[in-house]
Length: 375
Ligand code: KG4
Ligand code: ZN
View 1 (cartoon, rainbow, N blue to C red):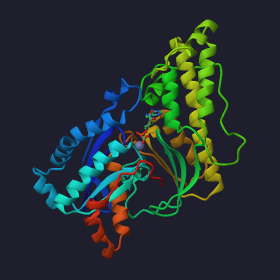
View 2 (cartoon, protein in one colour):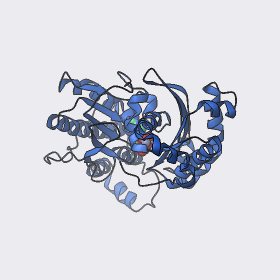
View 3 (cartoon, protein in one colour):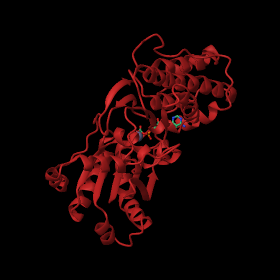
């Protein structure tokens, strides 16, 4: 069985083709075209600009994905591909629609079933596409499974008792962790998206101060990053002469605050922030693992590219129980990509009865993008 998937929820245009072989997903091609440079000058993703770029890129990315999978023509791809999957949401609505419309057209022209995929679900399932230390096979039973989903829009602790079934154990009460990385990066003048740049800066930091851990005394499994971000801002302002910090508040709003800090001050602020943000993710995960009985702990989403989080996740969770399987995505599947949709499409299709499968051939007529889709 061959599956083609399309992702355009934010600022990456991506198409992947995967084959189900020996109960595993084998990627035949995976193309990601990033728009990050285009949006960086605006200090964030501009939805209409993103949509325009997706529209421009989709035919080229499609062509390239087909070629790389060994299909010399669209006709040849049509003959081989069994299912089409597309990110339906959550995400930026104009961006989502470009992918959904492209997928609808393809489904109609090729007469193939069209399966909508939740973007959050796809991040969790990247471990079935490829993961460290081991890719899950399609017949593995890693349940009950705890997933920590960390991205620019979400911070979720999720319990899964079986495939495609989700119970939210904890979530952020304010900013998502990726959003907090990006906002602190703006304070330090690192541009957008600043998560990775902030993390690089943190490697050289040796702060003689620290920030307090959010929600420490609260027994719930939630997260909060907004207070931490404000604490970084006040600490940064405390490094500046008084007259200077007053004039900063009187400036016109701009994408980057870029306070006049020394390199050493920026490194220390980045390190102190990253330490607490990652500790917060780890401590809530450990709490969840202690309270419920889990077979597997899984990481996913853009922030799982963070080196400190990956290091601590891979080293510390094993210590909780030697029987716990600990997994995380390879670096190339942490950000937004189409490859992570393939297992979701596969498992959804398996769940649909023969009778109901017919409906998915007609999805091109009615499928809609949904900006606020939840798990
Ligand atoms: O999953 P993703 O690509 O998009 C969403 O679905 O939101 O996540 C993007 C987020 C951004 O906030 C970005 O700053 C963050 O992931 N990110 C990082 C790192 N690399 C990307 N945050 C911390 N450390 C990193 N190395
Ligand atoms: Zn994402």
